[in-house]
Length: 439
Image (tube, one colour):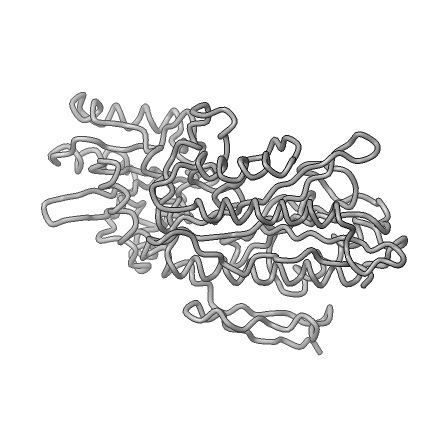
């Protein structure tokens, strides 16, 4: 008989992790009720109006539909749209309001979710877009955001035909008020609620713990990179969690020269190898982690890593600390990158093409400032953006060196941190020491 172990993820405490040692392939974790509906409601009522105010948007209009939905549909409550539905968020005389113009056959269920102030049924034969346009016309709105963007696909969900229908339904005066929602969606999605941060903290805990467990399974000269990756795959299956990015490259276990973003191969792990594992999981089919842990495979007679490997490790680890210390509200992304690259130069690291870090949340590379580009100041727009409280980042400490065959190896120990009013806070304790395999 299948055994079910019930684990309730307590968002406020986030203190107990299910014991992976006690799980077999016949056991399953029940993570409890998905918190997304309540978290989404809070995001709509607190973070969204704040984001609209910060980027001077008076109204935001999202058009949803079946099968080819807007990327923002799930965030505004329109994931179940069949016929065309219009979600309107705006500042009115009584404050922030949200109204949905929904096909009549879907309006009852949508209203019961209680995500919006009003759900207005659109009768068969009528147009939700035209009804929304009539509602908008008398409102004193200076800037109306719609989902069209050249730079952000999350803000580019409005189809050409929907745009034509909308602009035909609005007066020329209101059409002149239409602007891209790019800055609004960036501002809204880049910040996470404390409850969301706690879920990502739990994901990071599991991700790091499983990597350490996976390293303990290695038999030097026998185990392959792919077998270590398969072990991590089995943990995800046993715990019922998802992939943080494409399963063809997650997890990436690499005991040889740098391969960049890639898949684990059949390379046999040998004494003297430095092993990189880049791995992330997804909880509640929503929030992801992105953690890298590094190990060294001891050679016969060794009890510690040799002096050069230990130096590379400490240089990379300290580069991560430098980046962490630079992460404060009001700092540009490229300034964080610069803090680490300065230390890399002092420590003799070879050039590393990768950014120091990136936002992480709903996807591994989420909305927010890029922590990179300091070697070409001002050339990366995303690196000019400012860090703000509530943003979550995955970031690396780097050190790269040349191998005997003229290829390179890079240590890029990756941690996760959230920006607070005071600075940055690690989601989990950072890796302090190189993991030794075969000890």
